[in-house]
Image (cartoon, rainbow, N blue to C red; front, side, top):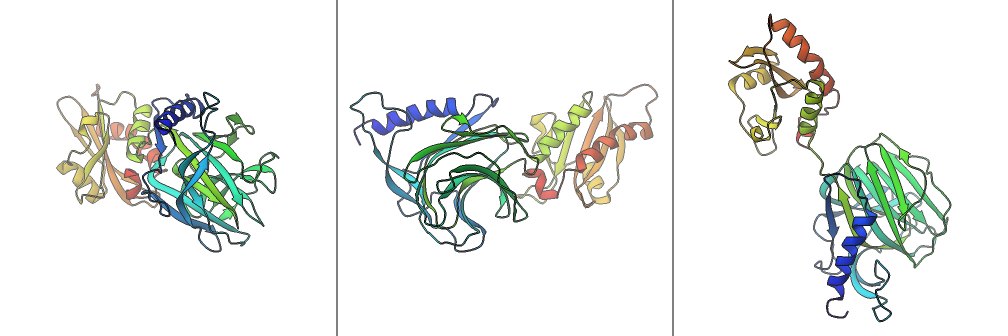
Length: 360
């Protein structure tokens, strides 16, 4: 590689990602995954091999390969190929329902555009490779993948280990050729782009709202993945989401705090609040009492009426405490104030699966 070629390629790749990965994500963060510092034959930190279906696990590792530039060269003298560190799945095994996956475990993503370039290198029975996104575990995730034998691009999902019927258009793919594949997910809307162009109409699915990203092959396919990037809106914790929803339902609240247990503490702490400066603060005696006794408490301060209510998960177990501060009004009594707040609490509880979920 000529001096400065890699640096120039990364600058141009960043510009390409800004265009390709969608400017529509407000307050978006951006991340490129660089495998050049990973020793060939090993996996980079934060990635793990998984298997959906049955059969032998994949053999995922970083390898050195000749890769064309992401963009057209600026001059005829520019190198047509550069030797780069890329991800590879190199273990063929012909079980029909074998889906080797490589999952990035460093962060979960909700709204994002996830993009890579891929090359199917071999496969006698199958030649399939693609992206995994909003991955929960080996039995629950979304997939977009290309098939060079089937000449199609398909979207499907695994839910509780059951694979849905694949949908998508007929598109010719060739073994040994590089393609750019991107997935853009916002809320329940999913778009798939091939070489920067929408591959089929926007999909709508409510199965998973956030999760990990990764790669997938099928059966005896071997494949390469390079130029991996994601542009995303940082995912708020469930506690922060619940506080935001409550403030939307009760816009006149003077203050609101949600208390729960963090993994690093056995004491209740403020997990989310209207005032961000309150996050991390300890719980009052009243909050601890409400948590222990599973009873709603009504009180007053010089400037507000306070309703402190237990927060339950779907099974009815207490997983936290909500502390509402309301502006006093004439004739205010405990029963009417609590009655105003409890419907909001009940609505928030419907989406909580357990105490741990609050901090995810």
